[in-house]
Length: 488
Image (tube, rainbow, N blue to C red):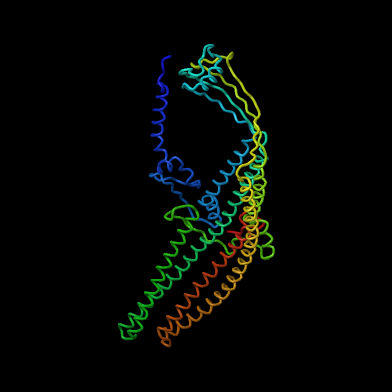
């Protein structure tokens, strides 16, 4: 019987097609190509636009209130978007965990050629074309096409599939709780950045006023010096003071730019994107006044606590799943197929098989024992993590309220100090203008007044940020809200 070429023309065409497609697909994995194809995943703002170079740029229009800042951060912060993607991945894994409970069905076509006696015998018999005078020791070259459908399902594997599905459900719950924890943290960070912008803006205002006041005094001092009514040292002192205030102004403006850029990062937009901020009313975030009530709320709402408890449940499931290695597995498989050397199938020459397959691994080199030891150690670690998380949450709430008490006391002291420093500054100013106080005393009084104003600004916004940290510590931005937002 003449030999047929190992690779026929259809096979060569398929090989060349595969090579061509493989080369063409290389461009699909370039960074720029991916950014263009999935540009809608880069920004989650309704009013977003994309630059011509295919790099996504989110824009924010108008003046943002505190609630606007929270809404945008909740929607567009990259950390939260990654958490949402992890939830989708966990949901896909949950759906995949149901696959073992369904039969696996495959449709296939096989081409085979050779001169192996065993393969020749099995394929020719399945073709129902075995010659009567076959030399089984030297059957010669043969070829065969086989097409069919196969199906199988696992009937028992020690409960592994059921536990894997429960673990997948727990994994989805953990992913959602992790997103809640990230959201809780991001919201507090966004509020802190929001108030940092206003604090820097107030510092800038104080510095600008000081610059204008000192510049005015410097003009007067120049006139007095030119007319012989002031000393050179007084003029030099004012000039030094002017340089110091201008340096403070530069620092304050830069601090404001940095604070706004930090807020933009939290909002998921580029630092050069322009946007304004509308000032929030005091005590914009509602929190419990009683620390004991806050502690009770935190123990019921902090996602970290719920997450570690779900991880503990999953660890116990893993311990139970590790026992499956000691039990047998039972599978059912069936196949319907037809063979022919020229792919001319007929119902009179079809074949089918069906059967049960029991496999019991008596010895696996202690792998199952090791898996169980690993699962038990993971359970022990999670137990310790549960206790650590509970202690951390209690400490977090306690620390947040202590910081609020400190900020409130600092604000009271700073407010009183501003009133005193203002009265002192006005008195010394009148004395200086009347000639009874020198320039050094005047500059000291002005410096003390400006510093008091900045300390009051710092204390005020520290109090607002402390309230936001309490909200984070009790899990305010997760689950149902039992306190209201009073943002105006």
